[in-house]
Amino acid sequence: MKFRPPYRFMRSAVADREGTARISSRKIYILPTGHGLAYGVLLILLLLGAVNYANNLGFMLTFLLTGLGLVCMVHTWRNLLGLELTAAAMEPVFAGQQACFRITLHNRRAGPRPGIRIDVEGSGPDITDLEGASTGGLSACVPTVHRGECPLPVLRLSTRYPLGLLRAWCYVRLDASCLVYPVPGPRMPSSDIPDYTRSAQGNRGVGADDFVGLRQYRAGDSPRHVSWKALAREQDLQTKMFGGDRAERRWLDLELLSGDLEARLSRLCRGVLDACEQNLEFGLRLKDRVIEPARGQNQRQRCLEALARYR
Image 1 (spheres, rainbow, N blue to C red):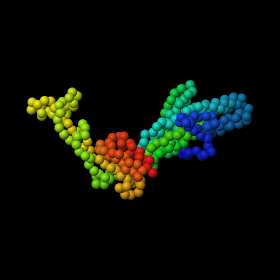
Image 2 (tube, one colour):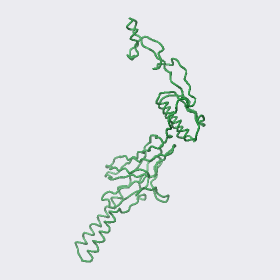
Image 3 (tube, rainbow, N blue to C red):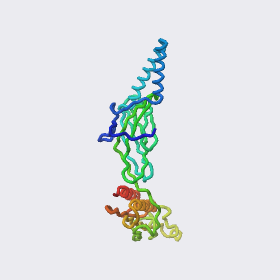
Image 4 (cartoon, helix red, strand yellow):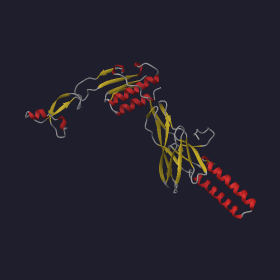
């Protein structure tokens, strides 16, 4: 049966200020499964047969199986009672990918909790067994469509332990979200990249671009940078120096692109990924924010976050 989110009138465990949701007794629902209904029908038939034939062994078997069902109900209910859940921080994803939240379960009880299951709308279930006084983890993967913040949907925590005759479940609301970047658009030719200019050239430090001169060898210099030709001419051991900033500088400007907003943000997303892949210095201009040119993964993350949260 497809999981549907609960209605507003249904009770759910809500995370506190520390982000932990605790399952209390009034938050747990319990109903018989298909096997449980068949088990109940069997008990009724056994009772009718024992009454009809006045069979004491039939009465004993009926009452024994009824007691077993009642004990099973208590164990199914207690398997969720007191369980604590928290949601871990989620790495950003691109729109169209799945945001997989990591749900941590804390078992404060000395006894084990087998068969703990988590369901979330639009994704398959995840099941784990918790040992006594231990911590375990489950994954709740949510498909993403649009950029921005993707909140963690309402979770359904359930169990059918120990015999599968009854199913106990509760709804859990955790305060967690995942940042969704725009869908990367098609690669842009150099002529279409907004404000595409070349940075100033020269030696701005030790780099690996253009040769700028020689200096005396120092212990620890890479053998690849040693001037072996100078050594062959019976000169002192020298090391080659290279310019430190010979990269292209790109300005990615939203206003210089045509099309609807989401298409332009997708193209800028692709521009950020390409510039970072090529180790270029790039900056981003939006209507409400300007990110100065820089290189590296930190610059990539800042630009992608700005695109994801742009309104």
